[in-house]
Length: 222
Image (cartoon, rainbow, N blue to C red; front, side, top):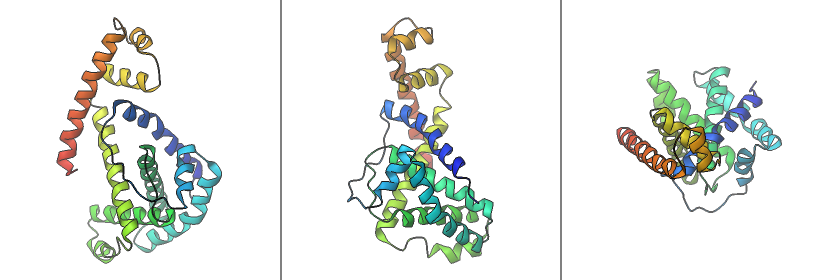
């Protein structure tokens, strides 16, 4: 059985980092698409709407679990993949301008399939991968949304990794500013001379983060 509380908490834990990213204006995808009726599920993830998140679980978790167990996985594998897929959708949506153009369940299922196929590939289970590779994309709208969502998720991972490479002071300044704390107060907390010093350091930290991100993104082909 999936632990809905863990899924919700995982989504909530991403919000603070998203605030940091938005505060420094790093690059993201912003597709212009026609909205599907299931957009309410995207909004539910963003607003931590427990009722609709439980509905997502009720309508999709069983299907995901059955498919993964049918393809060399376990219930625990299905739980992990389901949470990763929901988190990927949340991360994409949290950037803004994410318009759902296909049924939410189809997108979620496709992301789960892709993630499980990739995990099988890493385990060198080539027969399973070859069988399922032809099934990766069955619908153009789902394919486009899946690729965009997974790309955003990969970018988020790179951004998190490169953020951890910044100095302690840089991370602290960016975190405090993302919380909406005034630069003068940040200067006091960070033992800096004044607000102007904070702004200058923020720019230097942001430039460094962007450099680290671009280098890492190039290595992954983004």
